[in-house]
Length: 105
Image 1 (cartoon, rainbow, N blue to C red):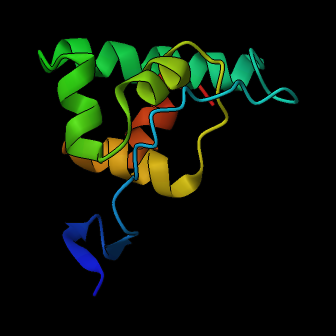
Image 2 (image 1 turned 30 degrees about the vertical axis):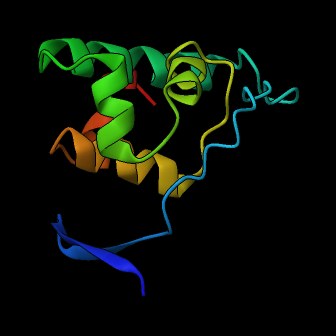
């Protein structure tokens, strides 16, 4: 059974099964690591998280992803999927479009 989040903007968000931590560190997305858009989005997530007073570990827990993955996203080393971005925005109770606006993309 899938877990359904409450309304996010006007759409109902269906969250995929929880992240399974196999103990492996995430590897950078070679094609997009340090891409300007990934770096800008990572910085926006970092600034929003700090503004809300949430630790990286807490945000990762709320978004149901590994803390090291969250660090890689904030550092621009990862190209997060749409679902991961929705989870992060939902975990901070902000609209995904606001993260993109904050990133300037």
